[in-house]
Length: 161
Image (cartoon, rainbow, N blue to C red; front, side):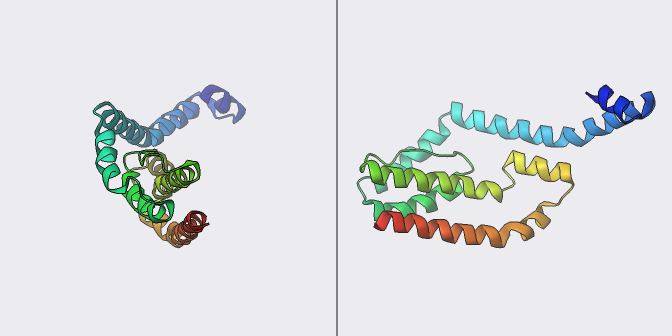
């Protein structure tokens, strides 16, 4: 593809090669970050570290009503977003309550991925764009706070109804 792009852009042999090398250098750092993040995920899955953490957290919330359970589930899932994306470990409090719990877990698992430097894709994208993480946080922090408040309100309303 680099040869095709060089030919279409009429870069010539030397400039095509230099542009290709610059592209490889630009992508090497983000590719390394993605590889390390994937390795950590595989390690935590294969050593059952994630299962151990979720099992320890299951005991105190087993049998609770969905209204009581949905907000603490979200609060517990936020820091666990470093480790897992979603899960159904809170027993079987009924189809509707289970759906709310899974929704709370999924939202809480996805929300911090827009803010945490442990998200390899976010970090790689910012590195490729040469956009600092601190600049990014200043840009999205208020939006993420509003999103968190709205989702918590909707989850609580869903549990209350």
